[in-house]
Length: 150
Image (cartoon, rainbow, N blue to C red; front, side, top):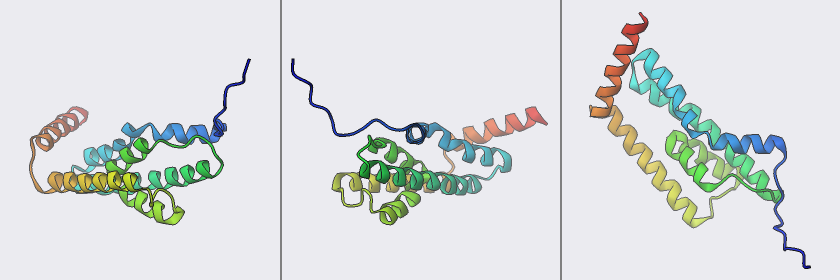
């Protein structure tokens, strides 16, 4: 009986597995922005919070991805990185690409990165400068919630 060929990559130690698992929890990325929008009633403050908080996490994920790649571990999937980039994390991701020299020479990855960044900026401009039905519904919901709690 022949042995099966093994992949050279190793499974992750616990602390790396936890950080990689965090990269999949992208719905949590919107919570700080929603909390600020709810508390202040100002969309610009919420967008600023989203960019600040969600730019820190991609830096951590890129750093971790570079470390995992060098040690031949299974890495954080590119689709997770792209989701975080789209959720206002692209400034941190851009910084991390250059600081850690990670993913910046991979052509297809960079095309998707810039598409995520452009889509994010377009969406933020739309939310900030145009009154959309989504924004009106969110404002109505916020007013109902604040009146309920007061």
